[in-house]
Image 1 (cartoon, one colour):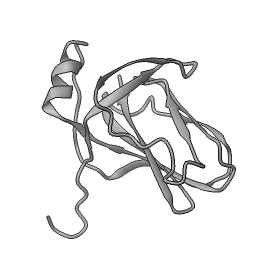
Image 2 (cartoon, helix red, strand yellow; image 1 turned 180 degrees about the vertical axis):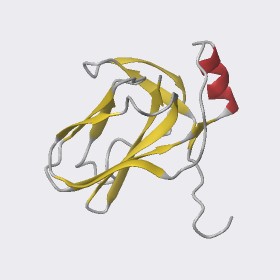
Image 3 (cartoon, rainbow, N blue to C red; image 1 turned 60 degrees about the horizontal axis):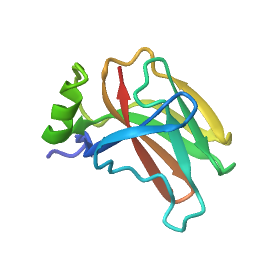
Length: 137
């Protein structure tokens, strides 16, 4: 890989949540990180899958950096998603949406302009990096 190229992260599963943040099942083994190493910071993103907006809730009022990249899924997960009659694009791991110095504990991000696909949401709080696998449909 040449310097400057970003590789799309690989998602091994998805945790589905409805518009009220209620768990609705999963596909595969989600390789997300929703809690900080010390257990003090948590985050949730919903709904998954999403079409218009992603809601993010954290328990930290510290400034956050938030960004979304395209991602890819394992063959097993893609096979499971095909049962949902879904078709997805994969491009690369470059940030498509990004925000710096976000102090709010609840954030809504418009994703309606993103093509159907698999994405990863990242949130950096202080030195902790958390992430969630997303589906935009």
